[in-house]
Image (cartoon, rainbow, N blue to C red; front, side, top):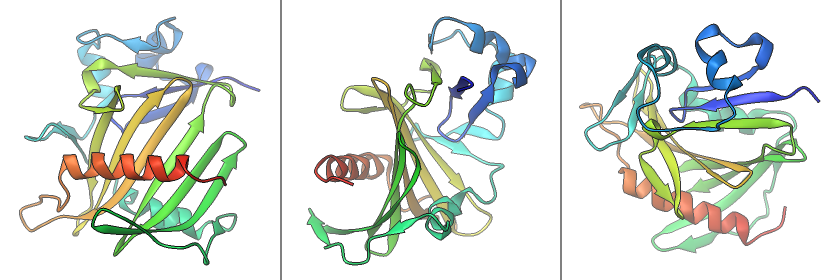
Length: 215
């Protein structure tokens, strides 16, 4: 299997590239033995390339632009022909919210996308044992803005031209990469209805739901 380097900076700015195909600006990062770039080590050129259309919000999460269709990633995943629907799965009430398993998309033996309905919107958890798929993950401390079970992560929000938005929370635990997506809407003032704390809490709810069942 050809080894893939996956460079994660903001949750949405993810470059999945083969070493020989990498732009010059990221080759030095991919060739480094270190898979964690310490705070302050990213050069201005790296940040310009990897954080294009990205700004830091007042609440500490990353606002990502330039991705006009990303808010539909969950809906598009469910439409894929190989998506496995679970129509008879029972709903589960956790705190004040009801969750129902919609189904899953298995991309490889080591990577799954599990979709839940959270009342009037959907959320999705992608779980990937990247080592078994021959990949490497590079993280940058400059992009860490949240903690998940003592693992640093990155919380980002991408908005559309309309009122649709998509949260993404990314973190790594050992050789497993977790990506949590949550649909949201934004107000006329371009503010999301969910807070960063609510997104983090919901990610932990879905993580625990996944851990409690067998797929």
